[in-house]
Length: 303
Image (cartoon, rainbow, N blue to C red; front, side, top):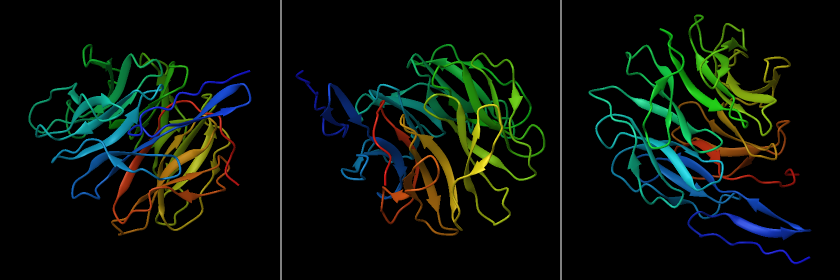
């Protein structure tokens, strides 16, 4: 059976190849970097090649999150004087402002829902110590507060089926991981340690959540994995660096950021879901952060 594989634009950096009777996609990795003097949104191939600046703006552009189909990217920018949510095509074109806040109010941490119709994000419009998780339509309309809590709620991520949001909150005294329904109901606390647990992300089928934690008392954060209900919290990284912002690829591989203390050189790494096979993708003498994969994929684990 003949397989036709579409080779997409080199700017988007997706590589397609025929396998058996199907077509597998090795997705792009979107991330932030300050290598050009200010923070910009970049894209690279999964092997770290072809690193390309997409935003090319004199302001700070950061926290990119691609849509599930890889066609769009939502990100945060301060190009209008304070942090706002923007969207753009995956090649950097059609950069569009979606939120408009006043003064020093900030909208940040945007992520698409799996169907691409909505964006979940955080905002401190209720006050600098009172961030809330909101949802809006993909064009910026219909902005709705989901958390409605006087604590700092942020870092949302949406489950693959679009029914759940995992987020970080200090509502119980320190930063812990919580989940809620996509409408803000049925809030549940998942972590219970005196140290901070942060930067959560669902895996490819929504059964597990990766996150970063300071619970080991080593002065740095590590990547952990747990079931979506909070059980079996397992440490994946073991080093003296700050490891944070895990993000799953659809075959289970995890991109994350590692940062040496007091060093302006954080890097985007990738590893297997058991913590093995750690590999530096970005390899640049600047700060890289906020990795996210574009598009579904079925690929073998790294050796």
